[in-house]
Length: 153
Image 1 (cartoon, rainbow, N blue to C red):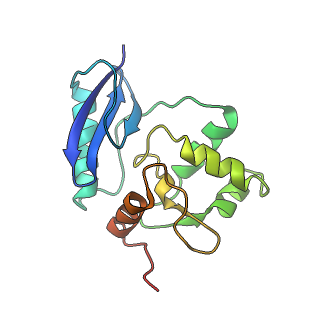
Image 2: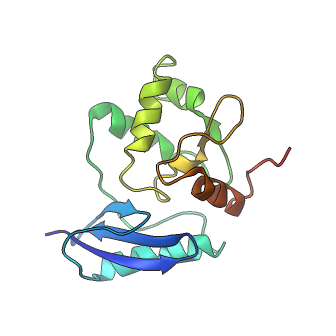
Image 3: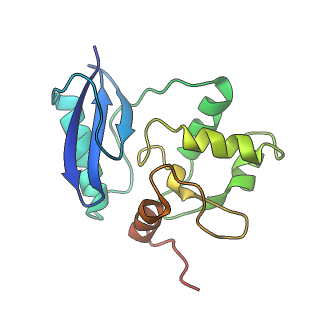
């Protein structure tokens, strides 16, 4: 059984979904489902709050995602982008083995079920501009500023 709980954060409302063993979804906003704050969901919230407070650079909560094999390959590779670093969509496509799959990589990022923990916000355009974030470029910029990687030139 999956449950969710919604919290108010510096980034706005964040809804966290999980079962007894894994976090399965994070939505920046409200969410519908069976509302119940489990210990795992609360632990995830605490880790996100610490991240947003600048006190955490990685997450320990177990996650589980489900998508196409390509999407899962992209999401797994996103987890390899260190805190405070950015890469381009083109570089991400290269890392997953298909330099021509830039658009497909962008689509996989858009469908990322566990943003923040799976750091799709760390991917930018080849022109070094902020592009493509499901929850708005203002939130992407906020997260990158938090990690001190936004260039103000």
